[in-house]
Image (cartoon, rainbow, N blue to C red; front, side):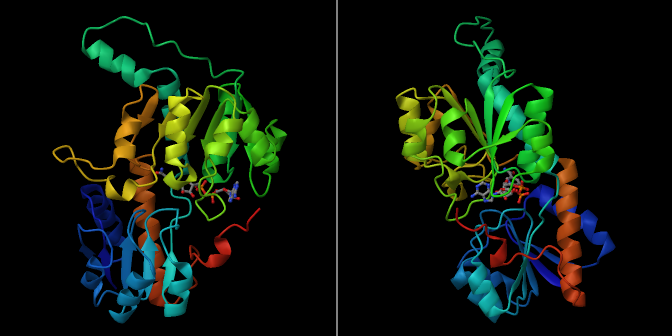
Length: 338
Ligand code: NAD
């Protein structure tokens, strides 16, 4: 099958080309992201392969359908950027990679937490400048602190386990369904409002849905503990960024580590170092000494990239052969409101 791979980076080309040896698909690597304009490029391609910030709305899907596309293959776990109802209407199947390497994201989450909480980026910058003073670098032990994990699926469960068993944190969790294995090691499920009120550190691992959008908002921050540390490696819009900035300015929030950002589609995955970035909210975030931001790279390990490429191309082969699609995404996967 001819597959238009949108938003291709060097690492996508490398891992998809290697994994394609087992399939022999006709891969058309395209640098632009999928959007209303670039959707024309997929004409004649039975499948498109897209990533987290490609635009897969109703209009784009209609153009794809007209051009003969019957499958959208997300090379990621999240699918909040796809209009699933429109895809179903147009007869386009959607597949994703539900579990390429939860360890990649979970390990990065803990790395971000430690880095921001122990001021490692600031310390490294100082040492490079031969400044060995320690003022301003005082951290806190993770041991004994109360951490709230929102969403205890594949990634959240690994983070919760690591913080509970590895670091000796008191871990609270919130999810639609409790994981008995986490309860068995002493992790307590509570209502999300209780978690946000009691936790000293909150780490987000639920999907972005209408119900979870801005789950960290002005109200949640107002009711949180002073000095709250927030880590988000899930999706940017789980946090109301303006409320986050207000919370940082009033010092209610102690530290923030983000791998994702609400408006990241305009910024992330591109080298903008020679450009004038016009997103004032993002630029304000960068000014805080207690904010650490990475550009959506929690997934970026050799193991994850290999698994993403293999699973995506296998799903496309299944679609081509008319086999059932194990990694199909449909509207039933969106969690009910609660
Ligand atoms: P998962 O589906 O295994 O787990 C998600 C969990 O969230 C499930 O247990 C689900 O029940 C729970 N959930 C759903 N709605 C909820 C709600 N309203 N409140 C609380 N919990 C709720 O997914 P995963 O593989 O663990 O991935 C989690 C998220 O991480 C993905 O949705 C994706 O957005 C993000 N992600 C980010 C990166 C990255 O590179 N930064 C990489 C992969 C995934």
